[in-house]
Image 1: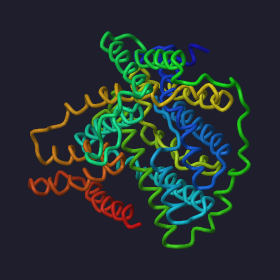
Image 2: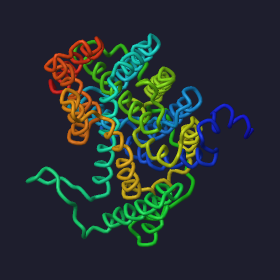
Image 3: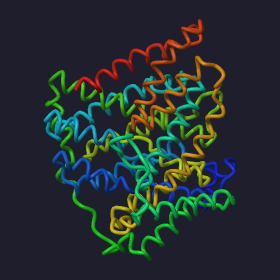
Image 4: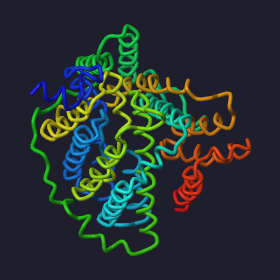
Length: 437
């Protein structure tokens, strides 16, 4: 069995070990396990059954991870994407007063379109057409974005009416839990302790339990909630998509998920060192994996599934093969039964890991030609746009709109591929659609 795993996942060729891959998969899971609780809460606002969404989230995440690991052989995990689930619940269902059943049908239709453009390799062509410097900017931008998430989740940065954001209160116990985790993890990383990020999370959890800042779980095992309230609803309501408004909703699901996933895949591939000649090997299989998970997820009863930036935590621990993603997928299945235990992994526990991973991902910024303003300006907009708009896709949009303009101004328009010119108009339309409502 061990020999088969080594051979199939090319463990030795990637200079890693089975133990390290399993640890990386566990670290990734711990970093993104919160989605099991956050997604039901967000989608529940639309009227969906929270228990069913919990189970659908776990199953869709597991499927995506297993496909990504076995088919594409990447250490990249998938789950229902944050941001697009809020768009689903608050913009579409509550804002536009569209029933959640119809919105779910919109996700189903968008996923079918995804699979079609993946089969015809249109997604792969688009990713390959993105200039190397912009890919580095995407990777660094995601690093800043997840670090900002960590600082916010940990209470170190809070909303401020006067200055938009400000330093959080140091009189809050859970904030000190984050500070402890950040200091411990930073020390471990500086000393190059294997699995430093994971060890930091474990020590932070233990401190939280000892001090009472994290409540001990009331149970260990619980049965997975039924899927009955949401299963198959998307297919039953496809006929409800019969207006311009609903077509716009489908296109928005399509565009946001496409570029969130594409940007995340590129950023993570850069971090792991998979990019070769500005191309991501097996990108078609990676895209097919998340497309399939998105389709199945919509049938089960959850918002669009996509690649997760938290995979960077597992990559930082040393995950380099598909075994990392397979491990994460298996843990999502187990997570359905051990949901009470997952409650101890609070945002204050994962926040330090996200901040440290942000530092690691920002290292790609040294590859950008900062002395070339035609490249530097769009790269900077991507880099800054992601955390400030709180959206990976919005940050990409800002940079991709600016890139052809700066290149034309530099009289280097011929260096811009036809696809990038096409994306210029797509993103202008994308920004208009998002702000039209």
